Length: 110
Length: 118
Image (tube, rainbow over all chains, first blue to last red):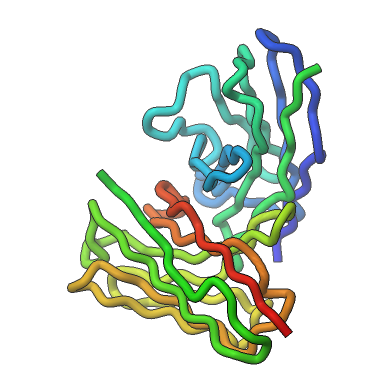
């Protein structure tokens, strides 16, 4: 299985940039597409798709969210961080079955 | 508007079979490229993909649950189903169904909590 590793938490100030990383145990690129997706989850709620295929913004998601990276190293950036962005963020690969998720990074206020 | 909603027994006894239903609207499982997946999340832990069923009836299962999973669908009633046999305490979690569009989960249900008692 492809293992996705995220830092457990990241502290950030409102109005600043947050950079959340996800490292995979194997390359999740294929034919120029990064099979890496990002989700936001708030307590008591279901996950919400933010970014798909590495860098594509999902419908209705603010442009302050962006995704980048390739191969085994990926980043979700939130710039600038707003109060509503305090949540848990997790990455997910869909290159190989079983599809796997990272453990999540809790974005906290500094 | 795409919506999904999970339903299940809430609580069941160890060794029983868990049956979950995902009722959805706003899309059809007859549409090319559309799949419905099941994902679970134990309290305070990460997400685990369990199974997927697609428009042409292809299915995928997480090998970590070996042969305990069965996914099926009722296209005419816009429902998908998941069965997990021989449940135990490790199956206690919130269970989500989600629509797959290609290689990502673009819409999720609100989740249903499942507890297993011994």
